Image 1: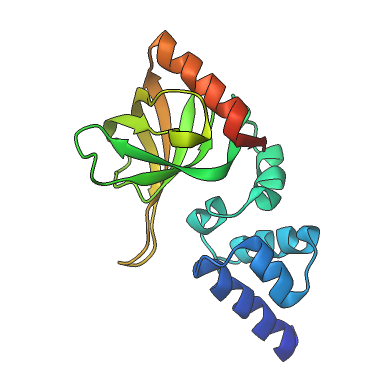
Image 2: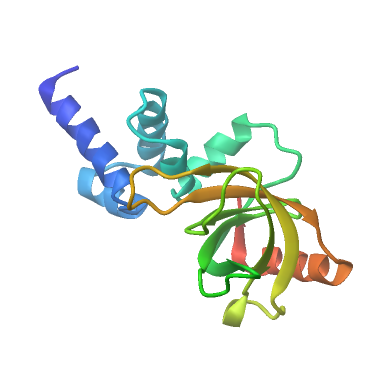
Length: 178
């Protein structure tokens, strides 16, 4: 690898870890979305970025990543971030990053793998649905460093029919296909 290419790759990895958006990285390095997607995959393969870093990316990476993974449900990525909190700690809000009828991805919500939580998603003004409440089991959590926001995946273990209908409506209003 040439010194220039090494600096470029390390710079992109640093920018990804510092939460620079895909669009900002594409503009800074004059990359297409396909080129950025390929670079993200390579950075992940050589451990320069983590799974948590990838889950914070936009649909450019998710579309390729999820096509390779056989999921039991179609993952839907949000076009905006919606607040989510654990019912007993409403002051500690995180953000929903993706949704399915079976699970939710979050950022900034404190949890540990194996935790059983009652989560509340707040559609707020973005969708004509009430708050959505369901029980969920934390399947995984990643956070790097002491300052990092945790990124987590939850499986919905129990949800009422009314909340499931609201979740389905929310998915239609605020997501893009992944």
